[in-house]
Length: 487
Image (cartoon, rainbow, N blue to C red; front, top):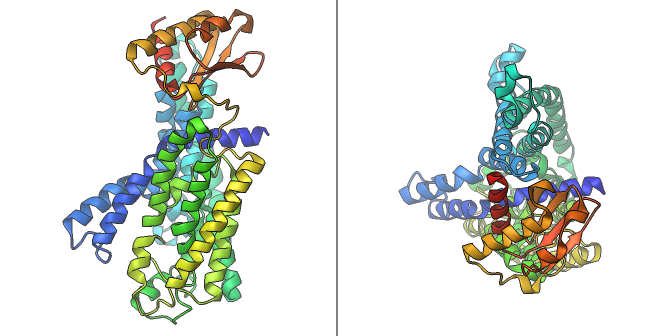
């Protein structure tokens, strides 16, 4: 139970950086549509759009966003020094484990360094960096050092301790990362002779490994020339076998164009009534990015930690889609990702084999995704976007007063009702509620808080209380934080 709660906290912390990604993916997709061969070499507008999107959605940039976002979101009082520490952790790990640094440490030529270290700037490292930074912040942000070192006390100590912790993590990954990476490459080579079943296994593990960044190890086997497959290059050059070349790409199209958008629709339909608008803003953009460009991370990261079991189902469905497409020899290919843009462009190539059948398969896959996701979400109460823990419906809270003065007055009264500085220990907020720890629950004046017009109060522990505010909660929380800083 504690593990699930921790994973859900990671998922909530990812919502802020994930919300940035769909726009970047769409920019890149538009640029690629305008210049699919040169990627900006033949069109300055395409180059502008691609580079603008790439600045956010590339593996390295996304990883930095995750490091900063998770560190900030999982720190106990959402402080900027935690976010800075997340960046520190990421820079330390990726610099120490870069190909050049590893070559220096091993005393070898960079060309002889294990290929695993070429793929160290990934989302997994970003997530780990953010977690480490948040742990260091929660542990050391209030530590007081002796007077001689007083300058480095408190929040200034956090980046230092984060850097030290990152050294230890780097030392572990120095030995573990290449072993795991090489093992996955060997696994990929082992399933090459399994035809459609092999394609299905590849699709399953490709999705399953997305959170770790190790999917690149498998991709190198099937998409590039590590084992003689070179699926992408051969498909686009026409140097392969019709109905065979492209089998390690084709099955992704039904999932990315139909399956994941249908999953987004299911998550929207199962979101709580008062949170549908918030959920829709993320899911609509992420679903469109998946369909149009084939960039799935915005959607996948929106639920992979909130509902990991559901993500495993998604991986299994991807494997099934890959196996079905390979079994019937339906092929299409991509240079960017398996979205509509690449489908449209690749369907006219010589090695494309019955590509329209992938659309038929996609319609079926879409229905399966929607029905299965909706059933599982409601059956097991998975915490997908809009279905956070302890959610009482706040139908009357969506139209709270939006004036700055009214918000400030509400915040002041709520804080006073909670007992003010003498009683409030920590303050946090989710989508609709304030989450607080207090010293003495008896000192809380619940009636005074209710008189501000909030829909309700939820006592969740001996010293933990939640004030249900509604969609204006972020502004109320900000006002309370201003009050706390003034005292």
